[in-house]
Length: 358
Image 1 (cartoon, rainbow, N blue to C red):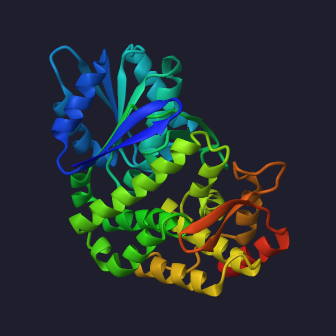
Image 2 (tube, one colour):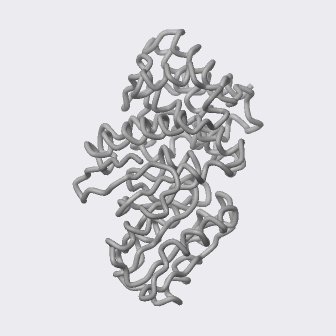
């Protein structure tokens, strides 16, 4: 078991990484001493949520479970309304703890509900997907999608703890495991060349979900994100580097009405960003080739999704990082080092996006 501390201005919290962490989770909840526990989960991992409920149950604290349909559509105003109505029916007060058991969708939805219910109740994240373990469970970003734009409504709300039990990955479908590899590659290209080189050598064992490889990858990604979040909790500066691949990626998700998975969209977005960096002479061709090769080795094909390029281009200016319609791109300079805040000529963006979707 490994324990990291995420230290942000609003407070510090532990991230525990290991196998079969029921005892650790129970200890976390006991230390928080809640008046009630509400577990928010989705239909895919309801059995895991029930196991968590048995783990944290005690004679003096009531434990409730709220299940949303699996999928991105639950991360909506209607989905949030359902969660808040449940909290109201259960008369959940400020002393309660919400436990998010699931992937990124559940974590974002439950986290936003925790941020706004009674003006804030405590949150414990129990990520069950590799994508949530390496990225979305860390850093306090919560939110739901708007009608057209991803994560349009949200808040920063840091968890009280993150308990990352790698045992959950044993039953994770291969397609969801593959989806997470895009975020893992993001850390390697944008921040950690050593991780990138490790992935090049160990991509087969990562695809096979070998335990020691997964442990190392999760630890490296969480460490990288914790360091960035500690310096910029609310994404006013350096934290923007974590959005590498997400400008075009989020636009693709929105343009497809979220039919394209997040992982595939981020892989597309990284390919677009690297090609834009090459076109504007910010990086060399070797970076583009190495990134493309690793993404393909990890099962993230460069085959373009069937989405109209005009819809993707129309969605890009609505990126949350844009100001007055001008997007600040995160661009790679060299492997292990990307830079946020780059302005890119619209003609270059149009050319690269259209060619990437041809």
